[in-house]
Image (cartoon, rainbow, N blue to C red):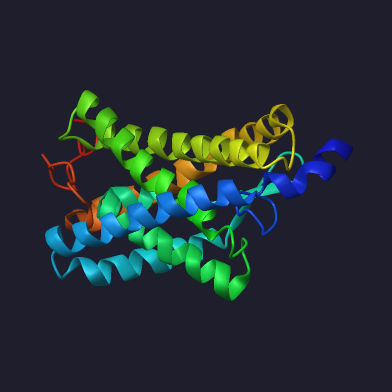
Length: 238
């Protein structure tokens, strides 16, 4: 427990100011700004007007959901990141913008993560989850079958869990490269706990997508095609 207490500040995915070196922080800023700029262009060129209010609703939901913490062993806790959820509902481009807005609001209004390392927090928790989570979800869903809910649910769960673990690994590497904490220590601490936190992320994401699929499947970006009605006993298992 002493070791856990010592390294608790490094377990959080929201990196505070002063934890990353200038070169690491600058690299994450450049990557984040570049992807955000591309996302803005893609959204303006591809998305319809009805997507804008949906983006607002999705941002509000993810922001509120992130405020709810669930306990994990060892006296710490986790919460939804939401990158994969945003990607599945809105696609990677609009989803990345939603996550960017969420972390900007958190950083400026709630001091949840440092402002000088906001680029790193957006990259780690938003862009990795949205782009990485979405495209992994697409690969798994295509391999299992594009037109049924079961393949979609599996794809969502695996992608949501993986996005959290990968984001924690990247964050650990950034902290190690910055000389904040040794790589072997921070990887064990960060990835070890986020393997468990990722389970919560997967469950919440699947539940959210399942509810929307059953009530408003038209709101999902490239949803699976329904083959039976909601009242059909075989719904969801065909």
